[in-house]
Each structure stands twice: as structure tokens, then as C-alpha cells.
Image (cartoon, rainbow, N blue to C red):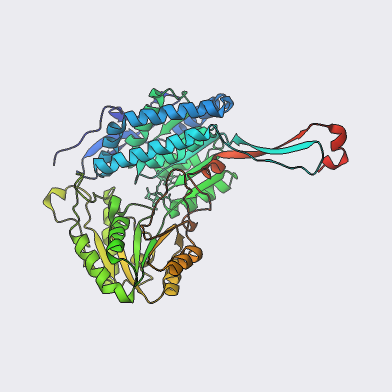
Length: 498
Ligand code: NAD
């Protein structure tokens, strides 16, 4: 297996970057290429001491940034987005090396990050508050957005450059300074973003990047009293821990967590279209999407037809890191081991394996973390395969007899991130859209993530009710302040003392 190397955009060893300077960390860890199993790069294994230095630097730089007019902050963000676009090939190569996705998919992700940057750069010209009525004469009431202060951002590795952009751009446009804790499986992508931002002229200290493990660097960031808002994307298990830790000091927390998303196929659906979207929703990015369709709820009348076509198409999917391949490896060995064990336990409990179920048998995948795309049916509901988030190229087929039963099955999960229905019946579609309790619902499409200008987030175990990105993200990263302007104090009189 030919080992791959990172473009020179990032240094050979990834130290923390604090206030624009490389900082010597407390230790190092190795990041492995999921395609080859070879060490790709060493990154800082930060401790609370390293995190403290980053938060202090951010706190020092933030006041000047917050006093910079929003429009000027927006121009800085435009410059970062432009530089990211200019460097798209190098950044995509880094994303591809770190995650094992193809260059084509990685380029698409970089384009999404650029679009996100431009959307929030434009917000610098708006950052709307409200101007409204007061009960008193001669008084004007309005709201403005203040920054929270220092934003501690924690991200996963599945779509690493999009995850970074999703949080850093809105945090910055609101006037916060950022300390970004990279995903331990994608430190070079976060490092590349910082380099791009620095080259684009973003003031030093506004964006610091620390690498390291969640229980060490991540936990220290969550607990740091200098961090005003913690925005976290990752698993529900970690999200719960973060919510508890942040609650102790009443820090604001935005949690974008896991999913176990259902795609429903009705008996009047265009079955080929449903198969197309089920394939993409279950297996793109090797199923490592919070929005992945890990449940396919299929009406009795089309069950066999849908199943047989889906299994045939799934068996023909190509694995690898080329643009002609359909999916790559999973992110690390632990994820592969967990997925294989989950499937084995489900089969032991009575689930029927329709395709996949093991490591890829292709000898060129021998050293990487490749799992064959897997479909099962008759899965016992109480097993991890039947109820937990899978986060890999595995999906489960279930029969349903009616729309009511399908909606009931969607709600049987603790998660509520996304859902999709395939039907030609407008009434069915409308009933599903209105009654399903998930953050995103689609008709005749996939279980989607979100566009830069639209809010994303989920119900139940999928989050804590916050929504990012879209203008809704501005509420995560800003404090609303109510202003009263009394233009004629004689008129305002007694009634102003509320
Ligand atoms: P994870 O929770 O293990 O880790 C995510 C990040 O949290 C990493 O940077 C990690 O270092 C850090 N972390 C871990 N423990 C921590 C702690 N105690 N304190 C602070 N930080 C800590 O998740 P993962 O397996 O890396 O990522 C996959 C998960 O992310 C899936 O559950 C997926 O659904 C979810 N996800 C959600 C969204 C969304 O928008 N809802 C998007 C992408 C991924």
C-alpha cells in the first residue's frame, strides 16, 4: 500500500496555534490514515494548560475584534472564504487523507465550507435586532446583538472542513474570539483552516486551534471559566457529559448530536427513486453522517421489490478513495471493530444479513478500515443494531403496514434529527411533514443535512434544541441586549419605571 502524505499547507507536526504562533504542547499523538493504516501526522496532545493559554489569548484579543464593526468583520470573513476557495485543492487533499473520502467528495465539502463563510460574511451587513414599540411615550425599544466572548468549539471528523466552517464563521461574525478543539481524527483539516485564515489576514488571537483528545483538551475547554459559549457537534453520549459539565458554571451550550434517521418508502412510491436516495442516505461518506438513513421503513406492498433492488445496488457499490468509488473506509480501527461487533451481535440475536456484514474482502483494502456496505432485516428492536446510532455503512430494513405505523416507528427512536418519506400521495406527504417530530423532514429525497442558510438540529437525543447554521446560529453566538432610548424624559414619566 502506497502511503499518502499531507500537502505542505500544514506543518509536518501539528502544534497548537495560539494567537497566530505555534505553541509547544504538553505531548503528541499520532493520526492514522484510514485508507492505509499508516501514520499520517503527529498532532499536539493538549492538556488543560495548553487550553488555558489558548483561552487567555482569545480573551485578550476579543474586545478589539468585537469593537470592529460587523461589516468590517464580514470583509475579513469574505477574505477567509476566498482564500479557502483558492486553496481548495490542498484543503480537499488534506480532508481526503484524513478521512479516506475521495478527492471529489472532499472538494464538495470544501465548497460547502466556502459557501458557509460567504453566508456569514454577509451577515456582517445585517446582524439584525428588532426595533419595536414601548409602552411609554417618547421611548424607543430595540434589541442589538452583543458577542458572548470566547467561543469554545468542538467538532467531529466526519465532514471535517464543513464542521469547522459551520461553527467558526458564525462565532466570528458575532464578534467572538474562537478556540477550536480539532477532532482527533482530523487535526490537519483544522490546522489548514487556521493557516488559510491567517494568510487571509484574520487578526491573530481571534482564532486559536488546539488539538488533542476529548477527555483531555475537550473537557478542559468545556470547563474553562473564560469560555462563554460551548458549541459541540458529536455523539449524544459526549453531548450529555458536556451539558452536565457546562451546567456547573451555567455556560451556554449548543449541542448537535447523533441520529438514527428513517427513510420511509410507501406503497405508491417511485421505487427506483427511493432506492437511489436510500443508497446515498445510508452509504455516502461510509454512513458516517449524523443524518444517515440507518432505518428503512418500507410498506408491505413494495417491501420485497424495494429490498431486492436495494441489495443488488448495494452489492455493486465500489469501495476506495478514488473519485470513481462510492464510499471509503470508516474513520478508525475502533469504529470498524464497533460496527462489526454490533452487526455480529444483531445476527446472533436473530437479524438476517442481506449483504455485507464484514470487512471488505478486496486485498487492496487489507490495511485500511473498510467495511462492506451492510443491510439487515428482521432486526430485534432492543438490540444495539435495532436502536442505537450506527454511524457506519450499515442500514436496517423494517416492514410497516400504514403511514400511521411508519410515523409511530419513526418516533420509537430516542433520536429526532431527520426523516424522509417517498410517496406520490400529497396527503400522505403532508401528514408526514406535519406530524413527524424531527428537525428536518423531506419528501421524495434523502435524509439530508442542511444548506448554509438553513437551520439544522434535532429533537430528543439529537440535540438540546439549538439550531445551526442559518441565521439561527447567530442566536447561539450572540447575547441579545434590549435598549431603551428615551427621547423626551418629560413624556416618558412614571410609566418608564418597569
Ligand atoms: P465524539 O462525541 O466521540 O467526539 C466529537 C468531538 O468531541 C471530538 O472532537 C472529541 O475529541 C470531543 N470529545 C470527546 N469527549 C469529550 C469530552 N468529554 N469533553 C469535550 N469534548 C469531548 O463523536 P465522534 O464519534 O467523533 O463523531 C460522531 C458523532 O457526531 C455521531 O454521533 C454523529 O451523529 C455526530 N454528528 C452530529 C452532527 C449534527 O450536526 N447533529 C454532525 C456530524 C456528526
